[in-house]
Image 1: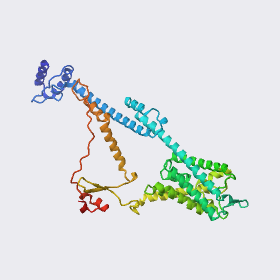
Image 2: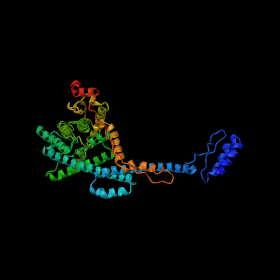
Image 3: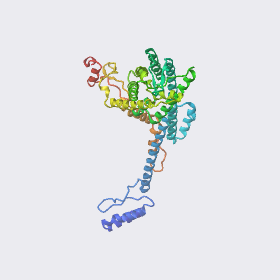
Image 4: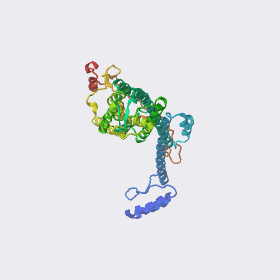
Length: 485
C-alpha cells in the first residue's frame, strides 16, 4: 500500500496538472481491483475527483450501496403489492358476508388461514366474490319482480273481473269494443282493486327490488340512470312473464274465466286512446320519481302515493281505454285469450313514450336543483347542538344524504388508510424492514424489527373553545350567541 502511495505521489509531482486526472483514473482503477487505497492529492493540495475517502469500504462498498438501494426499492414495491392484495382480501371478505353459505366456497376460517399463507390472490378472490354477488343480486331482483308482478296483477284481475268487466261486449260490425257497461260502483271497485293491489305489493317488495311491476316504470328508471341495462332487461322479461302467469292462473281459478282485456271504448279514437294512456302513465311515473326516486322524509309512504296515483288514473281511463298504464297488464290477458286487436299497440307505445317524457321532466327538475324553490321542505327545525366541556354551544350537526356529501367517499378512503397503516403489519413494518435490512453496514442483512405505534389520537378539545366562529351556526338553530357564551 505504501509503495502505491509513493508511486502515485512521485508521478504527480513530475506530470503536468492536466494529465494527473487521466493517469489517476487508469491506475486507480487497476489498483482498486484489490484492496482499498488512500485518496491522491493534486498539486496545490487539491484532491483528485476519482478518489474515495479511506475507511468507507471503497468501490466495493459503493456497489453494495447501489445493490442495497435496488433491494430497498424492490422491497417497497413488494410491500405496496402486498398492501393492495390484503386490501382486496378485506373487500372480498365484506362481500362474502352478504353471500349465502353455499356460495362462499370455503369456510370463513379456512379461507382466512389460506389468506395468511398466500397474499397473492386477493384480487382474484375479490373478482370472484364481486361476480357471484352480482349474479345473486340479479337473481333476487328478478325473483322479487316476478312474484310481485304476479301477485299485483292476479289480485287486480280478480277484483276487476268481479266488477263486471265481463260486461264489455264486442262490436264486430265496427271492429271495436265497448267499455261503457260499468256503473260508478263497478268503476270504483275496479279502480280500487288495481290501486290497492299495487300499493300493498309495492310496499312488500320495494326494499327487495324496488316494487316496479311495470316495464314502463323500469324503462323510465333506466333512462334516469337508476337501473343498469342488464337489470332493466331482466326485470322487463320477468314482469311480462309474471303478468302472463297471473292472467293464466286467474283464468284457471275463476269458473267463468276472466274478461279483463284492455280495449278502446266505442266512442274512443286511436289518438284519444293513445294520449289518455300517455297522460295516465305519466302521472304514475311521476309519483314513482318524486316519492320513491327522491329520498326524503315521506319516502316510506311512496307505495301509498303510487297506489293512489294508479287509483285516480283508473277512475279516469277505465271506461275509455280499459286503463292499462302498464304493457305487462295488457299482455297477460291478450296472451291467455290468444287475441290481439289492431289498437293493442297503443298500450305499449303510449306508456313507453310517457316514460321518455317524464324522465326528461324529472331530470330537468334535478338539473335545476329544485330543492331551492322551497328550502327546508323536509326540515323540522331540530338540530343536534354541540357543546364543549364548559357547556358552551360550538355548533350543530346536520343530517344530509350521501348524494349531497361527496366528500364521504374521501373520508372513507382516509379511514381505510388509517386503519391499514396502524393495524396491518405489512403496512406498518414492511417498508421499514425492507429499507433497514439494506441500509446497515456491509455484511449485515438482518432487518430491523418494525415498531407498531398506536393509532394517532385526536387533539383534546380546549376547555375554552371559541364561540365567535360559530355565530352563524348558532343563529341558524335559534340560539343567541350572547346566551351561548
